[in-house]
Amino acid sequence: MKTPPKSDQIDVPPAGACLPAFSVGRRAVFWRYLAIILTAKVLLEVFFFIGVARQYGEEDIFVSLALPTRDPEQNYWHSIARFRAVSDWAEWKGDPTDMYPFRVSALYPNLLFMRAFGATEASLTLWTALTGIGTVLLVGLIGRSLVDARTGLFSAAVLSLIPGHILYSARVDTDMPQLFFLCLGIFSLVLALQAATSRKQLTFAAASGLSFGFLYLAKLLLAFLALSWAILVPFLLAALADKETLLAPRGKLRQAMLISTVLLGGFALVFVTENCDYYFLSGHWFLHWRIMKCNAVNVESWRCAKFVTLGFIKLWLPPAGWDDLLAHTRMFRDSLFPVGWMSSIYSMPVHGWSGAVFLPALLVLPFLRISHRKLTLLIITGFVFYYLYQEFFWLYPTREGGMLNLTFVHKVHRFIFPCYIGISLCVGLALGSLSRLGQQCTQHWPRRIFRLAPVCLVLAFGAANCPGTLYFHTFLRESLADFRQVCRDLKAIAPNGATVYVAAGSWPYYRLFEYPRHYEWKYFVDRPEDAVCDGWGVVGGSLGHGLSPATYIEQYPEWLRPYYRGDVGPPDGWQLIQTKPSLTEPSVPAVRILKLPERDHKTDP
Image (cartoon, rainbow, N blue to C red; front, side, top):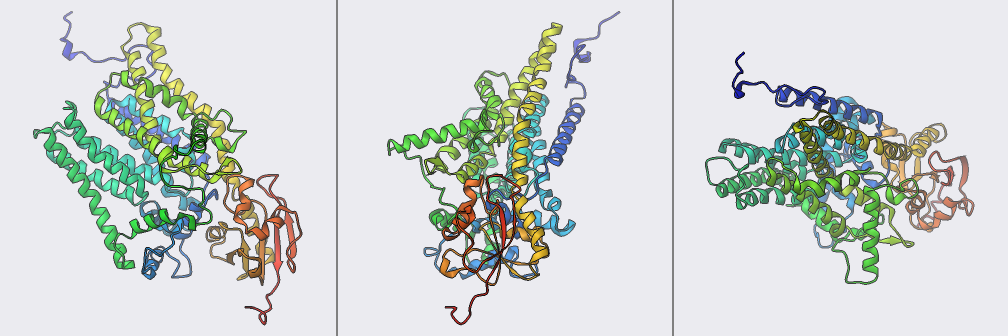
């Protein structure tokens, strides 16, 4: 029997292979396995659904801005128009909460979903959930475009199992929208660099620029850092004379100039449109930038933000500078290798065991034989530099009582969320190479081991992250337990329309849990001589921002803290109506509802 020519032979999967050969119907097989990963991602988001959880001040502001209210002056556009009253920006004292209305691509879709599906936690979280699923999809496509289908599938699987990505895909926040637009910008840039015609190059470059523009509308700093990197990459590839990119007939330098120019133009379109809109609303050009700049200068004006210091690490101040650097480094070591996460709030398992899989993959990356090698290394290196910049040059740690400030710890944890993309791609590259090595083996058992090992490593990574994910999920869900209970109890005690005084950071949640609102919520005053009156007060429990019982008290004024701790009785004239133990931490003081006396208007200053 005559043997057909080699070019006509069909690539048949080897017997016993645990993964199908991607050379036969590789597109269909890739999408089949990616659909399984995306389905698993959806199930994880449903199982670990959090909704609105008070862990810091950002989320309650998004809830307040996204939900429609009865007051026409308390809507999203009014939050922009009110800056028309600012005449001198040099004298204006910024507040970090002023930044949140400018995160349009992270915020405005929430408003649309709320108007379409009603005021529920599920509808408010839907946009974040969709962008979380979208990041997994896009990372899979980026990995396939850079190397092959295996790399894309393993990258998507690793990303979907990181605790921070699971939990923040199921709550209201900016992290998933910014990751989605960052992935979309990178994916479009990769397609532009690999395109063989000028038309495709310019089309994908424009799409990349628009994506970075929407990223800017979610997070300003990340957008400008990513945009600078994206504009530089084509020129670096042209300088390296990379044979796998910039494939159009034009010269490589000319292609790099065209791609970078069109990319910048797409970003500029979003940037100019935003500035024109804000100018007509507020009368100020570059309003977004003014708010960011003034908040950076006047950040101390926010009493809850004294944990932030902008600038480089102060190594020229020994020994304090070096001590802070070491404390800073240990904190992130514990973050990426959470060995003792149950014993310390500083090693919260936000990132799971990402370091355990990422560092080995990063060490072997230079030795892997992969396609589009130079472009791939540029992308991974960009995330490494971003991590170093954010962790050691953007935010500088401060201490309270000899320990790092807890709010600072959480802020810095979240600032490295964009690195999830680099972590998953790097690990996907290593596992994909291991899988390909198994495909090339001729012996049965080595081939089987090399094909199974990457899958087992991904499953082991997910299993190792499971306890930390459950712990963090419980922690976030319980952060609002006391406030929910207070809302239920006040309905039976206080009449509609009453004034209720609470700790700083609590009141915006009424717009979700008491919609339409029943009460007027206010914060306790800072001075006892201005003591609240003629209403109701809620003291104790986990009301107020904080990551631990030690930080809840920070949201109460100094004169009220002894009563919060239970060291003294209630202030004169306050009547204790109800006491219930906290539903969160046993060590947190009980939740107390008090009736406050009416002020004598004759002596009212």
